Structures are given as C-alpha cells and as structure tokens.
Image (cartoon, rainbow, N blue to C red; front, side, top):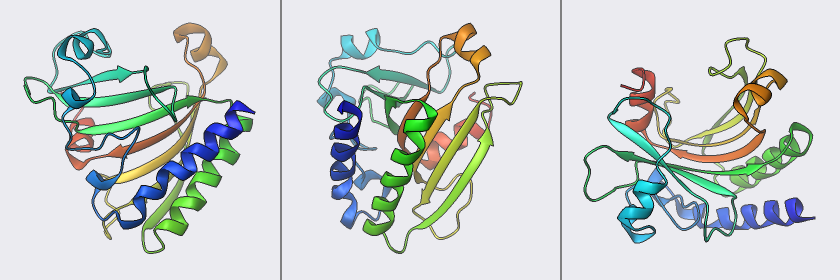
Length: 196
C-alpha cells in the first residue's frame, strides 16, 4: 500500500511540469537545477552527505539527501567542486522497488508525463547497465528530451528502473530502484567525458 501511495504522490507531484519548458522548471522534492543546495541543507550536512563514488577529486561530486522527503526515499544532487554557492547541476529521486513493481510504476509516471507534455520527445531504452561488466544488470528507461534534437547530451527528464544482477546485489549491496532524474547538459558532458 505504501508503494502505491508513493507512486500516486509522485504522479501528482509532477503536475508542476505542465508549464515547464526548461530543465530548471522541473522539481524533485521542491529542488530544481539552478537552485542553491544551501536553501535545503547546511554546509556541514552537504559535506557529511557526500557520496564517495571516486577516490580522487573530480570536477563534480554527488550529495545524497534522505531526510525530510515527501515523495522519495533519497535524492542524489550533483554539485560542482569548488562552487561556494552549491548550485544544483543535476538531481534525481529514488525509491527502492523490485523489477515487477517498478516497471508498471515507471510506465504510469511516463504516461502522466506524456499527458502533461504532449509535444515532448520521448524515447524508450532497455539496456545493460554500464556499471555491470557482465551486462546482466538492466536499465529500463523512458527519456523525455526537452529539445527537439534528442542528442545524448540534451537535457532530459528520465524515469527508469535499475535492475541489478544477483551477483552485483551480493557483491556491492545494490538494490533495484525506480529513479526520476532531471539531467542537465553540463553533467551529461562530464559523464560522457569519463567523469573527469
């Protein structure tokens, strides 16, 4: 019942998108790309919530927020190293769901987005997750491009189910998730250039 209610809340929380024509108009837990994370977290909270994805310092880093959330279990926020204003560059919300529960929810959210944005360009992907070298982990994605070109580094809103192989779950402790992500060109360029 909790999962069903969460998805209903997620769908209704997307209604702020009806007039969105820019990625910064999209909100996750009230936060948008271009906002200062300092409006939502203290500097100490940001430092204590930094994810250790990399051993060395990179151009960007990720902070996780898991408290005072209404729609998600956690939110990942991408920030630029050295930015004293802590401007949000990309943001994504996550809920733990297994594949059988996730795919119908992803499709329901995607349909709602299509109704809100009848002219938005959408593509569906079923692909192996780059993290898993065995290619047994999957990403089921609905990608809504905010530009007409649909280039891989165009800003987009992505609704996806990440489904991990049993080996990755056991080795790395990963869980299957439903993710809703507002992705900026800035972070996409960083990702496609090897996270440097």
